[in-house]
Image (cartoon, helix red, strand yellow):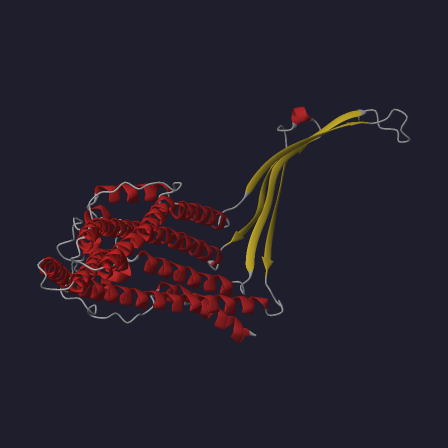
Amino acid sequence: MKRSVVSVLLLCLTCNYVAAQKPTVQTPDTYRGDTQPGTRTFADSKWFEIFKDEKLQDLIRDALAHNYDVRVAVARIDAARANLGITRSDQFPTIGAGADTINQRQSRSSAFDLPEPIKRDRSFGSVFLNLLTYEIDLWGRLRKATAAARSDLLATQEARLVVITTLVSDVATAYFNLREFDFELDISRRTLVSREESLRIIKLRQQRGVSTMLDVRQAEELVYNATEVIPALEQSIQQTENFLSFLTGRNPSAIARGLSLTDQPMPPGVPAGLPSDLLERRPDIRSAENSLIAANARIDVARKAFFPRISISSFLGYESGQITSLFSGSRSVWSVFPEVAQPIFTGGRLKSNVHLSQAQREFLLVDYQRIVQGAFREVSDALIAYQKVREVRAQRALLVETLRDRARLSYLRYTGGVATLLDALDADRELFEAERRLAVARRDELLSVVQLYKALGGGWQ
């Protein structure tokens, strides 16, 4: 029995040291895919320094002010702050004040004859201060519970920053998607106008016997293909506008546009910085770390439940048989009730509570390590995407220029009677698809910057 008590005491004395230790994680020296390693990172820039489009900035500001997830995160912070106040109040005594009075009249026909000096009408009164049960935190159990609640508050505050980072990236992503759909719609409409004009010319040639009905049908096919794309793009545009309206806390409505897809500025460089700095920059990592600190503190609270609890209750006041003489003479009364409570047999509840706290701590430790390694992977993926998408965009731009010139030459050869219409139509079809793929590559290049900015923990400053 003595050995078990001593063991618990030693565990409690060393718990502060364990709780103060940070979990060890394997940090890479550099990010995979980082072509410009250094100590500086563009994630230290404010979001309005990264996204230059004024309409996009307005959308982000509206989202930060009215988004539902942000408002829920603020409410959770208020709840965690209130919980900290409730937990902390257990460290202080609770004092109450009260007063009472009793008026009494004795019946004249009472079976008990009262002595002459005692009046039949009497009043009793008392005024008191009552110190409710106050636990002396000799072992620090209440202080540790307060520390756990404080860490929960910090974790909740960091979780709000996670929501902000995600919200900024979601708004930017949706806006760039919207501008890409706009760009594709513009390409489709221009292509449709061009193809309708080609169809008109081919019909005239067919009427004059220069072209065949097969040429007309092939030209009609291209017109119908371009026409089919337009409703699908209009649907995507309106649904993306609805999503942006929801992110900004508004009913579905049209979204004001700013710079076009091709005019969106790209940052001159995207240095990632040191991987070790990521642990301090990303709010989700800091939130997980504070949750882990809280779990360590709760292990200490569970262990110290084995120790005796020392509490005090007291009473101080005045009482008198006459209200007029309540505070005169020797009318004071007081009492003190010290109490010591030591758990002896709880059916294993206290030990199981310690094991539960330890299991919760292990779960949070694994979750912390998962979040850290996931953060390194996200940064590396975003760096690789940024490099490769730029290469894809450059090659698609060259392809579009080549196909545009090929289409021009093919139509010239067709009108000159040197080549068939099929060559010109194939060139036109491939040019249309290449222009759409180039628009997607331009959007993906912008989105790679957004994802890297988010992965590095930017956007919440």
